[in-house]
Image (cartoon, rainbow, N blue to C red; front, side, top):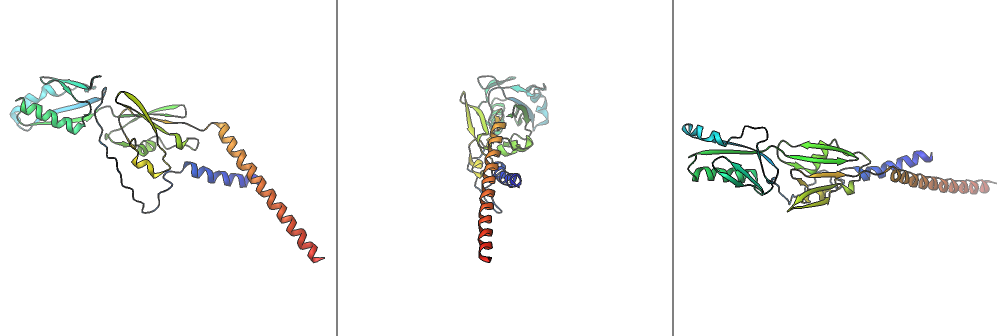
Length: 245
């Protein structure tokens, strides 16, 4: 009986500890303050394709198209080197902004009259460290939120510390870490909710000692409650019998 009650009480606590977005209900609406578009950073790999709207200029676009698997690697200074155009600073630009920049350089430089430029990330990855295990998430659409990454990880088990899940990223030459808690809708407006390429998610686990302590606490509490209930019931039964005599 004691163990059954303890298990029930522990399961309630576990639900509060692990359930996602507990403060959201049917019809909840949250305005997203932080919009995000991935920006190019050193060591990114970019796939760049140049075409021309003019068929006669098609051959002029070919030298700009890197056909290697690696694409164009952004160097430590945030630059790439393109044929004819030479060194182009790209760090801090979104891919759409880089498309516009390259289009402008090709047109104003007289290389291609009507260029069309496509830029894609070839290396948008999120790294996960969870309970002593590692995982790499390859993101195809260049956009990934904290909750999407958790879903791609297969979710979090009951032993994961929800209040200490960290997102770590490089910002201006420094590694910055923030805790995000998926149990609260506040997570939507955290500046690290929208993940960037090469972010780390570090999800610590509760140790077995912590789990045993919590179970012992609730088992002891349940035992005390049941003992008090039994005592009260015995006293009431005794009084009832005394009145009947």
